[in-house]
Amino acid sequence: MSAVTYPDQTRYALRAGVTCLTTPAGALLLDPPRNEKLSGLGSGQLQALRTLNQGPATVSELSAGSGTEDVAGLMDRLTDGGWLSVTVRDGGRNLYSIRPFGQPPARPATRLPWRATLSKFAVLHRDSDGFVLEHPLSWCDVRIHDPRLLSLLDGFGAAESPLAVSIKSQLAADLHWCGFLVADPEEEEHDFATRSWSAVDLWFHRRSTLGERTVTWDHFGPTKWAKDSFPQPPARKPNYLGEPVSLATPDLAALRATDPTLTAVLEDRQSTRAFDDANPITCDQLGELLYRTARTRGVRSAGPGEELASRPYPSGGSVYELELYPIVRHVAGLAPGMYHYDSFDHVLRPVADPDSPAVQRLLRATSATLAEGGEPQLVLLLAARSGRVMWTYEQVAYASILKHVGVVTQTVYLAATAMGLGACAQGFSDTAAFAAAADVDELAECAVGSIIVGSPAHGR
Image (cartoon, rainbow, N blue to C red; front, side, top):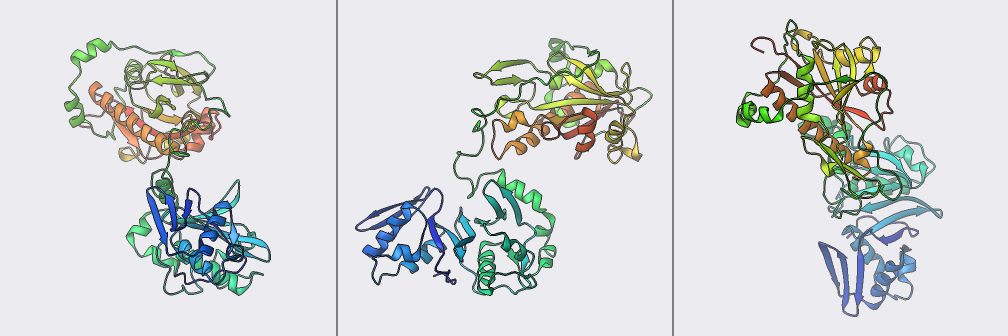
């Protein structure tokens, strides 16, 4: 039974996705694959469940005509089972709502001390319905309706608030039950598991994977949610101005016969951190590498206003949002600077001068990767035209982009190994510098990875 007695004004509602079927013999709560039978109910309790099917109601409203039957106890039972959303109210206004999406734990037997504060993993953000408090490992979200409650979230002992002490205690008890509070903020720093995860990483991990929060495909995965509202960003990025640089096209038939085996390149692949500047990578080698790894082999229509593409590496939904930007410091036969690889025409299009501050920042970011702080011959910066993915996918869009970065990185590694070139992927990139150098809106196109490529020094 619930250890908390909610105020009389509290409203209860069946949580999203739950259906309650009532019969003279009892009731059945449906939320596949989880269902629960309710037996031994009186007629007043059954009527209360029928009223819940019609929308939110208080215990008083649900108890109308129930006589002596324990409707409040039934609401506590369903609340503790995670079947109901609960909206706590005071003075005729909504304060906060508990919105379950999973199975709650038992309510804590003891209360947290007043020094309790939010877990470092708790995230407060605003959406179209107002403020919502989330925790990636919780079984529910807490919707904050009254902004006066926000002052309490930094700690329940010192916060000054016009709200009654009973409301503060109620909120603290509920946040404790929901898994949002810790007794001491230092406790999360003493355990390796909680200290090693950041709020951003854990939140991103949980929100981009299936679980209790996401059990249907209604708003998850390849829903094409934008199809009826926004045009799909085209498969081809508009050309940069300037004279394009033609690239060599390799003979793929000959490479099929002469390339090392897949086993050989897999076993020989390694990260190269030292390069031979006396014999740098050539423009023809760069052209071959780009052709083998990133060219657009074709575009097809998937219906009105929808384009899908084909390249040598896999891409979710065939959307192919990644663009390659070679940043050249020392490539034989090619002027230094930042270029965009036009994967449709297999040419390089000039983007920015080598001496521009943004390009210099992108080059300097490689010093931590190379031996003795060396300078790269060539950086292949990977950028994502995120709208290509986000037009199709919900919740998993950015996670899919990062997976695509991984397959491109491995494709470049293996092709470079087959060509006798060295490569070294970086685990970071300066996305602000890229946006400045490429003159793009970061929300439309952003840096998501980079790979250093060049002729390896003797012994690598």
